Length: 527
Image (cartoon, rainbow, N blue to C red; front, side, top):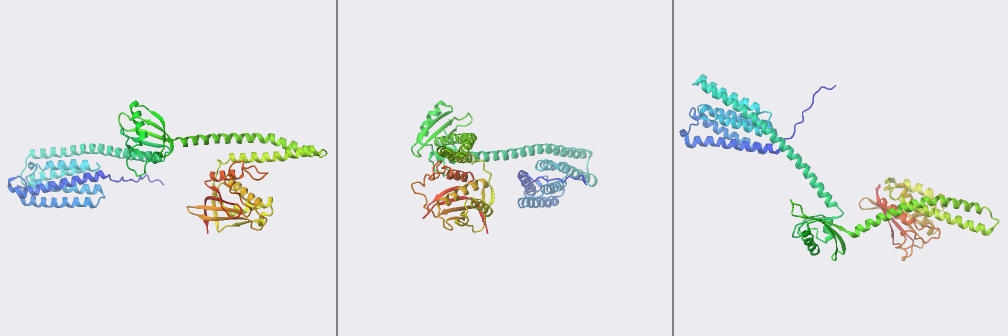
């Protein structure tokens, strides 16, 4: 059942409130010290304590002691702001009222200090107790005046003055309340805007820091005011965080750009870093004297353009391969039909050649289509033991000798991050190649897994064959390179591309006998 009770969440007191309360406490201490010093030094020469010098002196001493106590307590214990402020205001009203009584009443002028206390409390506090402070001061002044009327002597004019003073307390309290509310709202707005600005500045700094291109803020004299790491790398400047001047080549061109005072783009060659850089100069605005320089590596830009062209060609090749499969299937089917008639040996031989080459072309088309799917990666955590067991079952169906020729060594429970379809394609290619070139001995092909630093695993696949000629090792991952007459030359190339798409790497390692391929991928060993 909903009781309708909504809990009140108290906002934390701002540091500026405690700072204002500290100033208020210091003011109280000076007032108490002034009263005590005036009585001790000047004595009867001033009108303070004329009614009861002893009472005034003891009140001034107690007021000074309590002021010091409040000051020390606030420095050491910054909690319960409202309680501390209320206690201090009550002590102020009580002490000043007693000193006003000991000095002959309102004629002493001490009542004006009560007005300062009420106004100060309204400005220092959060405004919820201001009217209470004004009412408390008014009651104290009226009680003091009533005591004079009942015990000593008083006139109606004195009561009228006390009433005017009380009205002044409430007027000052309300004015201070409205002013304090406006000041607090402006302060909260400034704090919020400051936090937003600080977050935006940090985000902008992080974006500039991570930009692939270089960014420089330079003065009119060529002094670097700000820069990101990429700009320092491209210009060959040290990464010490200190201010440096632009290289002489850029500084000379900067003087030319500044004359035109217009956005300019120019390409410069740096012999020190052996790079061709493109500079984009943005002149200073009316408010700032510093100019902005964007630096880009043309080699990286050209490489990016080349990658885009290759990607477009890859998509085109995949689409063409898809379109080729239909007529290729028709040619293969026609060749099979022609091969059924064996009465003409020459025609049968030609039909067999056509059929065999259509099968080879079909494998090539399949490889190209597989290459086009390298970017469609869906990595997941794979149980290696179950995966390799299922893969071995498929390989054994195609090559029964694989049951004895392949030996798998797994130290413990293994988990790897990979796309299951891609991992199947990579291992199928490597294991079938190892079976093709390895011997018929038991354990001719070895598959092992070992732990590497930083959450990486290494899968090694070795065979005892003749190995790969050193002159050919640099070409084995190139597309359409093959030493097998029935191969397409895309197997290892696609295997490496699929590994890179899964944040892994496929490399050929040196080996005493046979070939040794290694896959470095993310994973873990569970004992």
